[in-house]
Image (tube, rainbow, N blue to C red; front, side, top):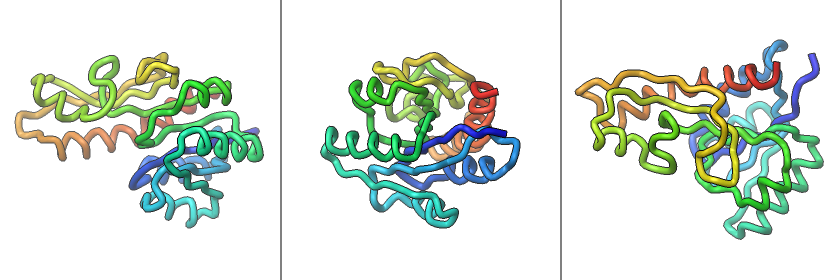
Length: 185
């Protein structure tokens, strides 16, 4: 099987990255992670890149210089797909245009509801009956790209921000992989 060279962007714990790495080691899974990018030098997820000997790049806060550096590395590794897995920085329009291929994000709400940050707080304050996650293509407009798939669960009256986060993350681990299979096969 020819696998799609992929780069994963992270900012934190990297739990989605870990699941993607484990799946990518499966012969039938359609991606090969060639590079991990983080905007946080203390991101716990970098330990997964190190553990599986995946090259990684830590970028600084100077937007244009950082994005140029990423584009050079992405070209070097012949990356054709970017996955945003808990990446807490907005990519510039110039970066999205310059890459020119698929960028996919996993978002912790049922888009188009609750774009951006604080999705769990918003779901609770608006007394939503259900929430979940959405995997979508990244466009120049925040959290507005074509939806690939959604997964949801019903909100219990005992739920709080922390329980919603945990339940959503459990959904994300499978949703991201399912979306990748859906778009590549």
